[in-house]
Amino acid sequence: MKLRVAMIIGLMLFFSPLVAKEYELSTAVSGVVHQVNVKVGEKVKKDQLLLMLDQEVFKAEVAEAEKLLHSAQLHRDEAKKELERAEELYERTVLSDHELNAAKAEFAKMDALLAVAESQKQKTAYALKYSQIVAPFDGKVQKIYAWPGMVVNNSVKTTILLTIKE
Image (cartoon, rainbow, N blue to C red):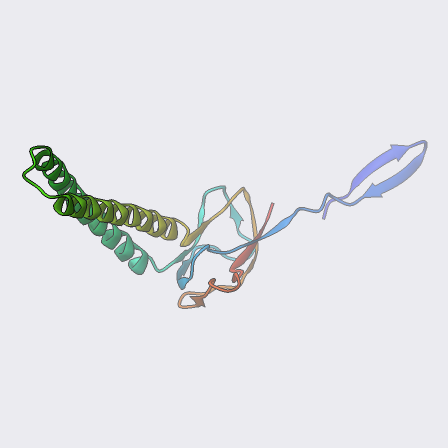
């Protein structure tokens, strides 16, 4: 450890270096550690991949959410066409109030299902993105608490996987 020396009115004062902050890192989601890409003492660069959970489940969930979103969009589009047709027929007094209201209810239901599917897609994309740890800044790995195959359960309490120092 290097020391800084300062001369003040003939006296020598020793200052220890500024203490660098240590940060505990974890994933925002639960899963199984797939790989740890660093070792203790290793210098890392900002945005360097440090650790990754198994991506298979996260990618499958994203693919499923995309398919559900596509299906929900098609069903909503069809319900909208049916509602427009029902409104036109109602204006010409060919359709009853009940049938018009049923078309409105079906459209509202499909619109809500589309919103749920969009939300699910966002959640799965978030989980995939945060199933890995990247260095938030240039630093040095201080401790590693994870290993391949380790189960990480962050649903109740965050599991610290490694620490890094600025």
